[in-house]
Structures are given as structure tokens and as C-alpha cells.
Length: 428
Image (cartoon, rainbow, N blue to C red):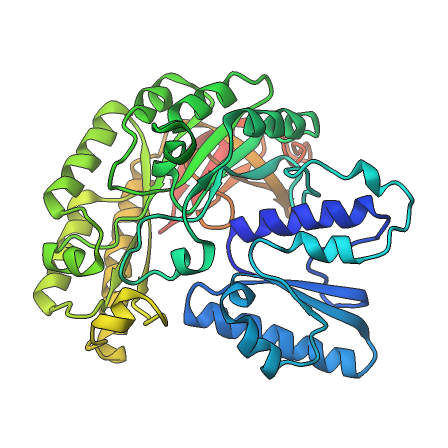
């Protein structure tokens, strides 16, 4: 359940179980088997409910004899383990965000060779074998007023550059060509172990590895942004001209209550510098509506900002009070749900019009496209500006009818048209 960072942990656990001789199925349509392991999400209310509903459903399957034992790990159990144990006694064992390796250690070895246990970063890739997430750190030091992540994951902990480079080389050897770098906060990478920003050095060294076709950066933080990454992005052809940086809002009073330590003027300067130093870059951001105290004037500033900044990719969500956060403890959730929804709908409608205009302007451009799949004689893929799962795709007419490229292949495409979010193109 939850984000790509959870996915990486699940894949690592799968590798440990595989090394002990177990046969695994990832996200089966119908759960079965001796053990079912659920990696939970505890970020926002909807994600918590989804995790709990899944566990209750598995408890019923266990009572019916369809599955054996149930193990739970991840963010939700890290934060609410005692409450969950009382609520769902059918679960056999509980692990948190960081002690999940204990589940693999608790199982009997079925192949007699677990002394050769995998390295910590080794994993079973699920999904497309040409794409992988690289988690370079865990935790966050920012303590934004609305966010429970630091309460779950603890302080920021970076992985050493050498270890990440070894992981990258190993994945290239398995056929991976697209690397999506993830963390709760990319901007802080290296500060805890090197005393300096180290994201630029890491990305530059990864880009040197033969076989690395695309490197894409996710979840940078605006405060203390590592500007030395920008020349690397501009210079290296295999570093995608793409940056995911959550800005949350533009109204100074709201940003101050959010405890973002970044104001509207700094936000505009950051966007302008990124676009100036990395020509052609596509920016993805996340914004929030309905934060405590957000007035209609604050919201109008946010809508105007979206029209001004013209983000290539944008997600937005309505504020949801999270237990234990600064906002939950010290601020009144005074924007009603209907107002939150109205503001969210208006903001996303504004972005849809912008995305449509930006897509129309791409007509005639030639782009490299990573083929994801083929459907009804057409090619479906992504450009360097499209992250898996969250961004649009491009629908491509093949150069030769009946001669379709293999999924995972890179092809050249000329953009021929678009709709609100997705592109259409012709294979060159």
C-alpha cells in the first residue's frame, strides 16, 4: 500500500524471502498461500482506511481457511501498532517501518543457503523490468505543520553514495534503464553523513554508468534547495529535464502556518532560477487547499499563482488533519469540507486548461519515448517528462503497421497532437 518508497521495502523483503526458498506473488488478484504480508500506508486518512479495509478483508479470508498467517509492516503499523493489534487480532505478527526484516528472519529456511543472504539493497523487481525506484534516504527533518511523515519515519538518514552506485550497477545488469530517485526529501541528501549537499555528486556518478538511460528526480524540498544539481541536469543527457518539488501554497500567511520556512518571493525566485539554468525543464508540484486559516483571498492567490507558474505537472489535495501533527495540536481545522472540495475542483480545472495548452505547444517536437506496452496496434509509452504511474502517457502510431517495438525499447517519436493531459505521436 502507499508510495513508491514502500514498494522498494516490499521488493527487498521479497528478495529475502526468495533467498530462503519461498515462492512469492506480488499483489495477487486473489490472495492465497501460507503467508500474506501487507505493507501499510499511514500518510493520510484515506490511505489509512484503505490499509485497514484490506486487513479486515484478509482476516475474513483467514477465518475461511483461504490463507494462512497474516503479517503486517509499514507506516501504519509503525504508528498505530498497539491500537491495530487490539482491533485486528487475526493478524499474526506486526512489524513497523524499519524492523520488517524480522519477518524473514522468523521463517524457517527452505533451501539451506540463507547464510548467503542478499545485500540490503537487493530486491525482486515487480512491474516493468526496465524501470526501478532508487530510494536514497529515509526520514525527514522538516516537520511541516500538516505532515505526519517525520512522526512515522524519524529523522533524515542518507544512504552512502557508494552503496547507491553499486545498487545502480546491479540493476543495470538486470536490464533496468530508467531510474527514479526517491526520498522524503531529496534536498537534504548527504547533509547528515557528509555535512554537505551530495545530490549533485550522486546523480553525476550515476549518469556515468553505462546503460543508465534516464535518471529522474522526485520529492525535492524548496528550502535549502541544492542548486548545484541544476548544472548536472543541464549538462547530462541521461538526466531527465524533470523535477518533482512540492510547494504546497503561495500565500505567505498560509506558508507561515504550514511551517514551510519558505515564502512566496523565494518560491518565485526558485522557479525562475530552475527554469533559467535548466532550459526546457518540466516541473511537477503538489499544492494544498483548505489548510487551517486559508481565506478566500489566500486561495485566489494560489489560483493566480498556478496561472502564472504554469506547471507542466501538478497534483493537489484538500487538507486532512493528521493526529499528532503541529496543525492538529495547535490549529483549528476551520475550512469546511464543501469549501475544500470547491477550491480543489477549481484549482485542478485551472491546471487542466494549462496542461492542455502546454501539450498543444509540443506539436511537432521530436522526443525519445520509452515503450511501456502495445494496445490494439498502437504503442503506449512515456517521455523523459513523464514519471511512471503519476504522469501522462503518449499514444504512438507505429512506423510500420504490424511491426511494433518491444516494451522497454526506446524509440523516436514526433508529437502529432494531444488532449488535456496525454500526447499523441508518430514513430519516426
